[in-house]
Length: 177
Image 1 (cartoon, rainbow, N blue to C red):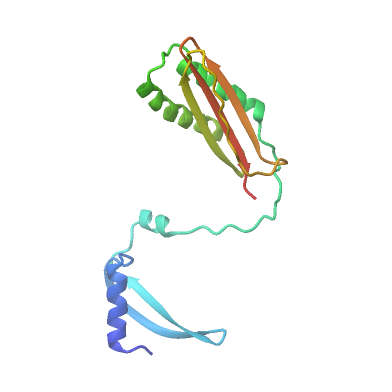
Image 2 (image 1 turned 90 degrees about the horizontal axis):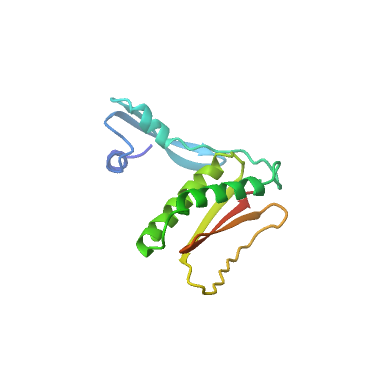
């Protein structure tokens, strides 16, 4: 059994960390698990924690599926249509302004990511990259590097141009094993 000062110290540290609301009683015991002794704490609350607090404390443990490849491949053609639709709707009538385009890249990236997530493709991590620049007859080379499995990972890309700007949208889909 633990001594009284140790019990009080443990109770104070639990209360300080915010893991306990108000304590009515507490007990400390020593348990033997596989030949090793561990201290265990048994606590009861005067005030029951709210349901929202319980949900935020719960952790979900998923079982291993041992699935090494996707059951459904990433729909590149559908995502290309989404890219074309979003870029055309947002940038068709826009002129190049650096501050506006800075905000538009963030907005367009979020919209594209949300629309692709609506397709409910399981176990794919999405990375959306948007480039917007001014068209002045210059040449530009944009490169990206990724480490991936060519059997399951893929990229979808679309380039949009109007009179004053260009936009390049890339969606990288990386399969999570």
